[in-house]
Length: 94
Image 1 (cartoon, helix red, strand yellow):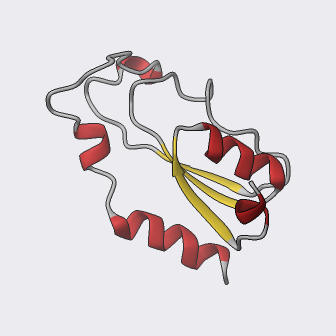
Image 2 (cartoon, one colour; image 1 turned 90 degrees about the vertical axis):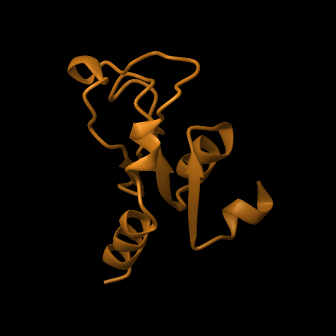
């Protein structure tokens, strides 16, 4: 947690450390799959420091997620590219 607190930015998955980063006020990029409901489990965005990356895919039923614990295709994560993360990082530094 001390390392995260002193970081300029944090990039993480849907995990406890991502939520901690957001609460600490660190610029946080959270990479989310389509398994959870949009707006339900994202980190708390107290001071506009959090950006969530999530791709809309056909199996994300009306934004409610697919709720699968295992996915053979995993398209919602495959569609997230390094450029998506870099674009957000660059936009936050302008």
